[in-house]
Length: 315
Image 1 (spheres, rainbow, N blue to C red):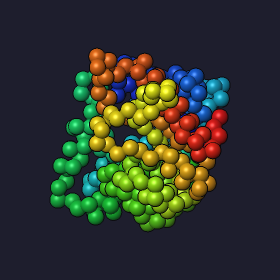
Image 2: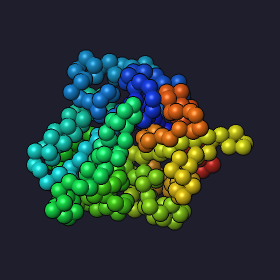
Image 3: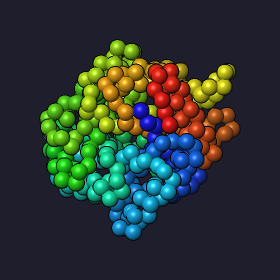
Image 4: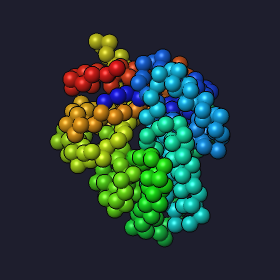
């Protein structure tokens, strides 16, 4: 497995400070020691509307100069609206992100079934507007109907991806998708060679060894992308350990079992770090750009350690 860095980490929405430009982000990832990057398909990074042919060529050239692999383009789509105009706008954006991936040389575009989005409230983002808003929207529309809307959109964009030679990776992320089984059901129902899986461990509801292994084995060779997240600190022995940012009741993420299971299914693609949640202050320290640099470095060291424990080499 290879360890990459997802640009949502440096998008400028979860910390106090500016966003890195795409080129700055790629260089930062290389300096930290990551093997590749995943670029967010929205502003200020890689919204296709902002990138003409020259800008795309410059990103490709910068990736090559830095010796960095482009693992994926990340979409932030919601295919679940009962309003056709909403769904068509979402599919149009995904179409353009597929073409962007083709132009930049990214093999994968990561998709959601339904992404409620984030809202900027002051200097940092919050989920507390978009998530309740998604739940309140269209109360007369059943989840079964939403499932059908998502399936229809996935089917349509999968045909586009097939034509462009790009793979789509459906993430096991709520809402609509509530389990890894739901993710695989969508993939089966769409039945396209272009639609694969992005199974992420932090989204699994059961974190015991056997449950993690069962999800990985069921996904098998559909797995083309993965992520890990969270915050980290140095333990007593100096090694990075997860910091319980969501409180002590949060179940520990079982990355050891996940990495072993990924090796068992023969997955040798990217697992990309993302810092993508509201970050509470630690004492008097507010999350700033230096904090993000520190977390990205600790996360890389942590995952390298997990891979080493499993006997897997990293660059």
